[in-house]
Length: 463
Image (cartoon, rainbow, N blue to C red):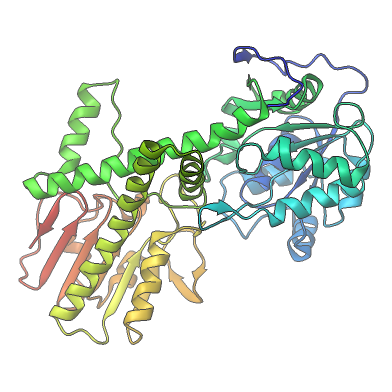
């Protein structure tokens, strides 16, 4: 691979694993203050570092600097940690300010996917700003999702060329993939092992000095291995989601509730943990990482793996398309031109709780209804999302479904689980279709109304 790195088996290190030479790292800069970067700022401050959070969004930086609160995102414990450790935290939109005061810089900017490849504009811009003021001895750690080979073959030459400095001599470079789940980010930052790799041994030592304070470090043989770890993890989960949903379709065809099968298997066979059927792979990470894996398999002529991943993507698309078809058929059959729609849950997931709507299937279905039924009256419920698509979000399920002809239960948030169908449709309109995506409804029982239909993912129709 061209790396100046001694290959060795993966090893587990209880502490930082770094035999510090010279002045220990005491100040860390974090670039990108979103769902990944800001919790990292709080966690690093909690374990004793001084931290400088940097973001190009001046408004966000100004708010954080004055309030030490992240009211634009829901993350349990984050605001409390920012407040408690505020004396160790500063925020800026000036890269040179951060670079002047930090010995290590962690890059957490976004890399969204367009088509099958990640868009690297943000991370390239960030690395260019870092390179312009890079000091001798500084460590740069990439944490953003990138295609394999990026750190070694793209970030390294970019930093060297723009800074005029040499890796391993003048500065150091490492990769540590983020693997935190929104809703439990602070907990996982302090509890999950951290995969760490450097482009050379000293880069690894310095990076593990930083991340070792947060817990156990898993040393990997190269930065390319580390880059592939996150892609492998999320692609594996996406494949399991596809299996769960396709198996659910089989159960529906056989007249069996797939949840009964999943519960029985997972209880009886501890070695097997089948995912619960529901919606497709959603959110900002799962679809992105599996698309990168699919692209790489095609580029390397791995036809079987490519076909497997394409089938997985088709499965996720099928679930979304099926909900749209069910919606359309119900609207057409009942000649509903001005339907009232209640959407329960628009974050991309319900548990662990989050307000993040990136990659949300609830939002996608909302957009479909707006486009195809422009006179529809849509009401939304979500415990933490404040607004979406300019629409107010209600805080009451009852208010949201009042008079509704279509009730879409889109996440597994606890507030919309184990709901009595009779209570749910008591104030609904007529006719009414309830789409239950996550076994939200308590069993058994249906209201004694001929105008009520229920479709449950993994179970099928009840009416």
